[in-house]
Amino acid sequence: MTSPTLAGRHARRFKAPSVIPGFGVTFGYTLLYLGLVVLFPLATLVWRSSGLGLSGLYQIALEPRVAASLQTTFAVSFLAAGIDLFFGLIAAWTLTRYQFPGRRLLDAFVDLPFALPTAVAGISLAALYAPNGWFGAPLADLGVKIAFTRWGILVALVFIGLPFVVRTVQPIIAELETELEEASATLGASRLQTVVRVLLPPLVPALLTGFALAFARGVGEYGSVIFISGNIAYVSEIAPLLIIEKLEQYDYAGATGIATIMLAISFVALLVINLIQAWSRKRFGHV
Amino acid sequence: MSEIAVESFPRIRTGAKVRPVTQDAPVTRYLLIATTLVFSLTFLFAPLALVFVEAAAKGFSVFLEAFSEPDAIAAIKLTLLVAAIAVPANLVFGLAAAWSIAKFSFPGKSLLITLIDLPFSVSPVVSGLVYVLVFGAQGLFGKWLSAHGTQVIFAVPGIVLATIFVTFPFVARELIPLMQEQGTVEEEAALTLGASGFTTFVTVTLPNIKWGLLYGVLLCNARAMGEFGAVSVVSGHIRGLTNTIPLQVEILYNEYNTVAAFALSVLLASLALVTLGIKSFLEWRHADALAAGGGRH
Image (cartoon, rainbow over all chains, first blue to last red):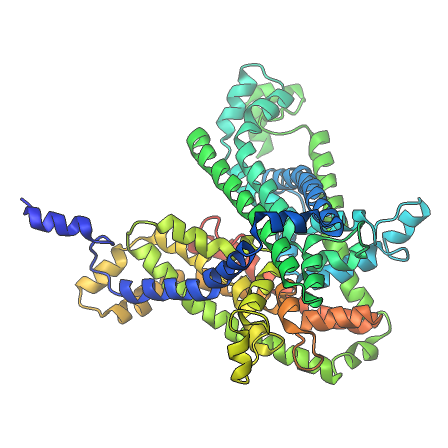
């Protein structure tokens, strides 16, 4: 029988009792380091923007050049995440379900956009799609201009977002049980019906998560975009670039304002991802 | 082999090859494989190949010349220095965070993990900006810093800090799920048998997490050496002083010094290839020693 005082002491304890040592030091260091390196600087940004007030933020967002850049950033990121969703699903399916020569190499290369520094990706994409580039020249003959337009931003964001979709969907495809497909086929469904009604539904949460991750990354992306976009004001300027321009003009309020708007969007994206995953755990029993 | 199969399963003798119901029709299969191949050739292989082709465009000697430039050498040295500080810093943090989160139970754990992942959802440019707001001339500590004759922004400390920020979660997010999976039984056994806490960590925990640790450090290092946006905000682009390799690449490219820009890019692209190679090797050979679904950034 436990004495009431002991039980009371346990209830008040922050961490459950354990024989393993080192909680105080490691937990304290984790909080200190996290606080100093991440939370304090981010809090400074929030504090600086609270000085602007909501109306101040609104004013900055409505500045024509800022509004245009935010619009470009969000619209192109959304489109790019959509393209990644489509091709990412195909790539994930192909890489998980089929055997073909070079599959392992291709699978490893999906992570290239994570591993390749964005500046390198940026100048390389710009050179590829420039009017005299490998892809730019034949496209120019067809009258299509990619580099130094909004399409250039789209190309860069598709590149940068692809692994998010593939890597989120791939493990779920690998986990799909073939019994369900067999049951569906046995019950007379065509292959297309099986794919659409049995295989795709459990993939939806992962697809949405991948889309949200690709979108969030696209909104914040800088390095791979600025070389190919040409940075024409009101046309192909992205929001992160405008932050840098404002900083260079010592317009700290402006830079803080745009950054706060972008930060808010990333938090919304993060929240949406968490909600999708919570829903998915309830509905399908996995993330 | 096939003869025996035919003998024992006479229905196959009809000649028609029966496709399992869980397989797509060959047409679908080829179409999807072709789509994947074309998409990855244009979006993944072409940008990588172009880096090497452009760097070699004017011959090997011109390529090598790019590395004898004093500014390029300074950039390489600075990049190595920044990674040499940022990676160990986040390694120590990752170990501490994973130890406290995975080996103990306390309330608010998932919030803590979310906060650790936070830098991944912040734009690199914003990551740089927050440090300008803290340490910049008009920042929180700007006056104090200049009164004491120190500079953080537009100097090496700022670059190190911004790099630490963007690479913050890499080691921790690989180790936390891995150590959570492994539980505490082995450590408890070692402690019961009289090992000290440190001995337990070195002889029991470390061998269990070494591949995951290597995996996290690898990704952390790749990002630390290649970071552009955050570093670009805090560096001030002073040639020979505060330019890392990616920033030097930007300057060279904007000066139309394409060969030199791509030559330095070859360095970073090779780093990326080596990273991908070791990463794939670890996932293939030591999949069981890595966190499931971890390190996917």
